[in-house]
Length: 231
Length: 121
Image (cartoon, rainbow over all chains, first blue to last red; front, side):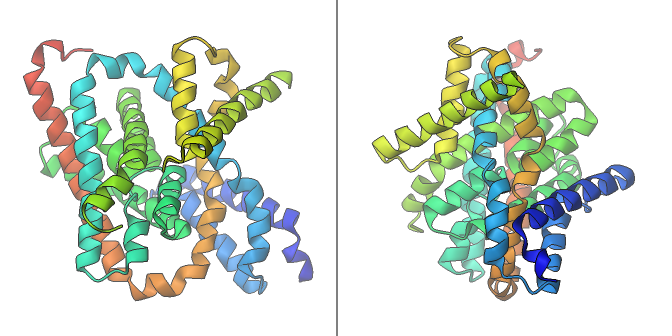
């Protein structure tokens, strides 16, 4: 039983869970069976069964988590590839991104605050619409709980991916570009992968939106929270 | 093999450059975002070519989800906070996500109607 706390075993187990759940989702195509979410739950279950402290896993997990930052840097490549498309409709894209970003930060912060969430939790929710590495960095800068953020971000992405197109139908959002942008702004990479299943063009704009909203959120969140007196 | 090492070097150079700028200026911005913007600018200015970063960036972006499993596992340390504040967390996140979808789409459609002439691209 002691062997379970071996860090290379824990890393290998994390890989194995993820690959297994990816396969499961590929077979079933049920969006609720999100491999990221299921792997997190499976690792937590494994640790609890083996009576392993989180700190032990943390050492192993750092080997994997380390690659988050380079992955965000790598987003520069799709951003560069889409520069011409973005330029051709710079104003509509930027304005919709700015609106979505500000509404996303303000609404979640105000609603959570009104419903009685503690400041620590409110700060952890502020960046919930953007891709996890960015959201966690923002939360760190705000003094929230990064891992709470990552869990909320993943759940928001799953919800956005499942409900997004239904919400847009109700809201009379019909243009393919607007739909793609909405998915990427609200539901980051998970929304983008959902948009990708409709067409590549949807996916491309969703990818643009997740990048721009990520940058805007990283740039604006501290300022917006300052202006509203939450920081 | 050599290509992967070289491409890794490029990505980490930009990350390090981002870290350096954040350290130098003290801006409240993730170093990774600064690195992202620097990489985009360098690609645009042809200082870096796509073939210098395409394989590694493809690998990193395709597997981004996996990298956030460990930070997600830290969730087990906060079960009590989540349980205590489940209602504000869930309601705020769901309502806010719906708002973001609607507002982003509406603003884009309204703006496009004003810029109708350049709509096809």
